Image 1 (spheres, rainbow, N blue to C red):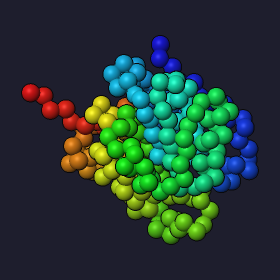
Image 2: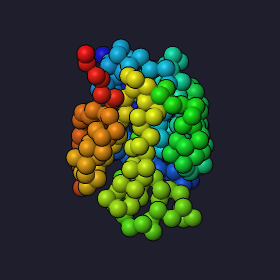
Image 3: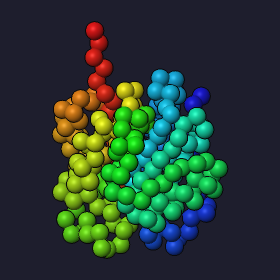
Image 4: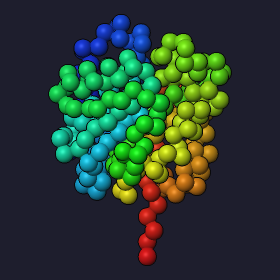
Length: 221
């Protein structure tokens, strides 16, 4: 049975979580979703490169790295430098290698990673908020959850980049909240040449969470 082991996070302290998003139901939902897809990821996608955007503590990309092993190269990005440090420490503590890059989304890596990402993961800041919550001069941990109007401000910026990043067999795993507007998100990525499926959904308190998977449309002759 394909299984993903949750990484050991005992090296992270309460002090770390003052600046870095502490793994919660959304984090574990996306890990469970990846576990449910692991057989297909291994046997059909056969990934050589995986990337998580907004890695926070590093729990998700480290979990994937522990499961897929050294045949794949792992990257992560985060706009919060303390999150990048936490991701590196989580990877090292769990004996895997993740290259964590401090940047906005994936902008500095676009040329390097173009059409090479086999597994793309994004647990975005999805909570609908007022725009002032997106102030980068405040506590950087706010940027891990504050999503602006409809919770879509950050994820909408990534969507146009997805077709450029994904390899021909690549998979894009996106966690969303009901209030984000699933139908509109699917339509947006459909217009970009992607097909979609629902991998897993779960209620966490008042939040209805869902993990979607997007892939390039395959043109059958």
